Length: 555
Ligand SMILES: Cc1ncc(COP(=O)(O)O)c(C=O)c1O
Image (cartoon, rainbow, N blue to C red; front, side):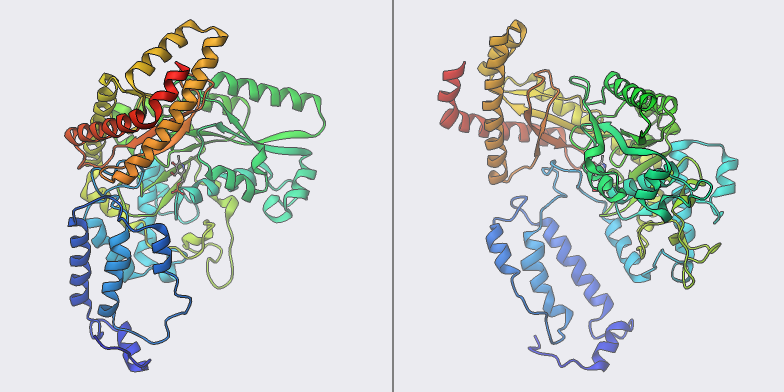
C-alpha cells in the first residue's frame, strides 16, 4: 500500500483515460465484483451487529480527504466499513420492504449506465439513449392505456408530444402528475397567463378559488403530503377518505359524499373549492391492496376532475392478464405512476409517469437558449428534474431479458408465496391475518390463542362494555407486537416490517401489524414456515415472560 500519493496532474489525468489508468479498469472491475459476490455469500444475520452509535463514529471524520489515493487502497474501507454493515435486502429471509433482491445482470447493466454517462436532459449528451427512453415510455404507456397501434406508431418518437417522463423515483412521478394537474386546472385564460407564470395568488384570484383540494384514501403514500406542499395547495387540503372495513380500499360511498358536499358548497358560495385530482392507489404501501379504480374514474368524470393512479407498487402486475380485472379503470386515468425499482426488480431508483393525453406534459414545458430549445428533441423540455442518468436502460434491458412472460411467472410465484403465508397464519392458533394480500403484501399479528378466542367472543357480543374491553386488549396486543418486532430484529434471522392500520374488523381501533412483502423469487414456502415458527417462538417467549399477567387482569 502506498501511504501517500502526491496530487500529480499526470496521475489524475490517467484516472480518466481508459484503459491506461493506474487503477486499471478490468483488474479493479473484477475486484469489485469479487468483493460484492463475497459479501452476498456471507452467512450470518441480515443486519450487522454494529450499533448505530458505533456506525456514526466510523463516519465522523470532519475533514475532506486532501491527497489522492489508489482505488485499491480504498477497497478495504468500502468492504469493511460499508459493505459489511449494509442490510442484506437480497436475502430470501428479508421480506420486510419493497426493496428486495435484484437479478445479477442488472449490476452489470449499472456499469454500462455509468460508463456511457449519458445525461438525458438533452440530445447533445444523450443521443441513442433519448430514443431508448421514449421507446420504454411507449411500452409502459401501452401496457396501461392499450390504445391502438397507430397511436403508438405516431407518438413513440414524435418529439412534439410526450407519453410520459422518466423520473428519479415514484415521488417525482407523482409530483410531475400533480404539477400538470395544477397547471391545467389554473391554465392560461384570456389575459391570465396561467399559474405557472402568474403564481398561486393571482391564479386563485382569477379563478375565484378559495382553496384547492386533493382526494385520496387514508392509505395514500405520504409523498402526496410533500407534493401538496410543493404545489402550493397545502397538505392540510388533502382530504383523506377512510377505507372500507377490512378491504383497505377507498370507501367509495364516503368519497361520493365528500365530492357531493364540495359541489353543494360551490353551488352556494361565491369563492369555490377546486379539486386538483382524485388519486387512486394500485397497490397501497402498507397493505398492497388496489382501490376500486373503475368507480373512482366514474366519479372523477362526473365531477369533471382529473384522476391519477399511483401504481408505483402494483403497475408491473399489469403484465399478468389474470389480474387485469383488479386494475379495471386504470386505462381511463389521466396519469399513472409506475416505479421500476419496486416490482420490476431493478436497482434503485427510477420511476415513470405516463399521461393518457400525449399533450398534457406540454403544460410543464420549459425552454432555454443553451439547452432544451423550443422544438428540440431534448427530453428535458418536459421534466421537472434537470440532469438525469440513463436509468431507462435498466428496465429496457430487463424487459428484454425477462420479458413480460417472465414477469408474469415471477408475480405468480410471489402471489403463491403470499397466499401460502396467509394460509399458514390462518391455520396457526397464535396468529391472526389482517388483510387479503392482493399484491404480495401481507399484514398479520401475534395473538396467543386464548386471547384470540376471548377477543372474538367480545366482538360478537357488541355491547358497549365489551367493545371497550376489545380496545383495551388491542392496546396491549399492540404493545406486545411492537416488542415482538424488536425481538425479531434483534434475533436477526428474518425481517418483516411493522405498521399500524385502522379499519380492520376491530374498527375503529388502530392495530399494530407485522408486514411481509413476499416478492423475492428465492423465498420458498419452507422459508415462510421457518419464519412463522421463529415469530411464534419469540412471541410466546415474550408473552410468557412479561405479558401473561397483564392479560390475566384484562381478560
Ligand atoms: C404507493 C406508493 N407510491 C409512491 C411511493 C414513492 O415512491 P419512491 O419511494 O420511489 O419515491 C411509494 C413508495 O413506497 C409507494 O408505495
